[in-house]
Image (cartoon, rainbow, N blue to C red; front, side, top):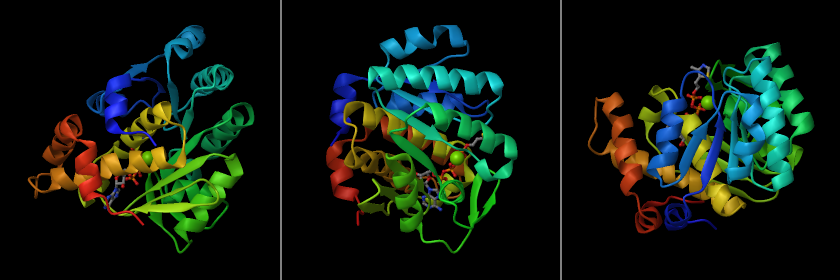
Length: 258
Ligand SMILES: Nc1ncnc2c1ncn2[C@@H]1O[C@H](COP(=O)(O)OP(=O)(O)O)[C@@H](O)[C@H]1O
Ligand SMILES: Cc1ncsc1CCOP(=O)(O)O
Ligand SMILES: [Mg+2]
């Protein structure tokens, strides 16, 4: 299993295909845990950038045709090189285009981690759910069943985030019960988790490392929440400050695993 210390010692380079909304948050989250983010626009440098990177994170939050081509090119290079690929199917239930774009990438690229909220992963698992755009929305589906089904479908690890994070490799299911409700009022926290997941899998590509990713962000939120009542935007800044200082000892002390 990866540790924060290993992430800081190794400082893996995390290559990101971001959405148009949250790239700064994603870069900051990756940087503050001690990894090294890089974003890119032009497909012509996909091969060179994968060559220097230790993981690829594809966020499909605002993908157009160019982003899809870029995701396929970089994803194939990443698969060839053997570095982990994380994908976030942001609001996949919201439009046919999102579904078609995701299918195009999934056809060509093998994923190591699929990260999304309950609405997004329920869509991929073909389980009924009322997603609310980029937000999870509501549903009666069993979260363990959804996380397990997604992991089995893509033969990888799934990280279903929410009040409780549910992580699966298709066989085992782990819950991380830490967190804070201010995550839900700040846009981009799921995307930050994608980047953190990329960094954890870069150090060690395993279910336990995906669990660590969920613990890192959720525990940072719990600590940040102690001093930010009624100031939810300050909460987000405090999450970044906390990520910068977070230690493996703190994570082990505060974890609520099941
Ligand atoms: N109501 C909540 N209570 C506690 N933690 C939450 C809550 N909502 C989201 N989180 C945490 O926020 C982070 C982002 O997850 P989430 O909001 O589900 O992603 P997205 O923004 O993609 O919908 C995760 O670490 C998750 O554990
Ligand atoms: C608002 C928005 N629109 C397209 S992507 C995006 C950001 C989604 O971020 P997150 O899922 O991390 O809240
Ligand atoms: Mg999201």
